[in-house]
Image 1 (tube, rainbow, N blue to C red):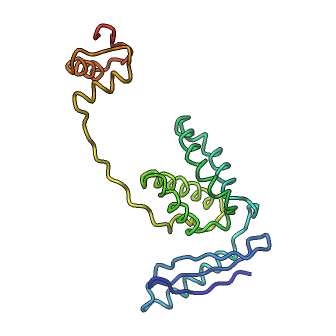
Image 2 (cartoon, one colour):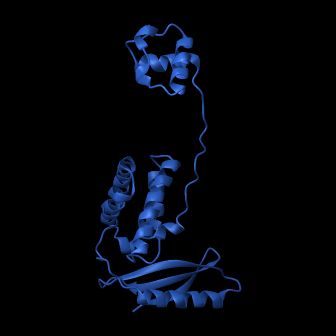
Length: 220
């Protein structure tokens, strides 16, 4: 049986839906109504009624013991045919970190909520940049959007996650000496007479030539 109630949080009404996930386990979902508390009680009640009916009609077609980490594996294999090989490899590398975290905590797809994902972002921000965490969050959101589309879940919990602030890229330039040091370190067999040689190399590459065509021996 599906039941629900209105709860107040941060000045807004939330619909709290309780339903059986099909495996005998009672699951609770918090869904923002979008309505502020003042003057919107009737609208919030109507929203709650609609959500209760919606969840009552949902056919739980998934294996209720499906771990979120296992679902990500299935999603990646399905998504593999839609992307280039290099993109797939990048997704796989990022998803490995996500899967490891959620598998250790045994989070099931149907039980996944915004707090789980928010906690993951907070955890990863200790070791990687906000920009990289945003990439992780985008993958999670995309995978869950697919789960929602095929009716494995009714709501996408990532929609309610606070995104970390993106770091603005601040570019910098190499000095002439730093460029020479960079190339000498990369091509230890070669020495350059002066920075003008390096300038010529960059010009050579910029007009469409391959780095392999640069005759480094003649620069020594």
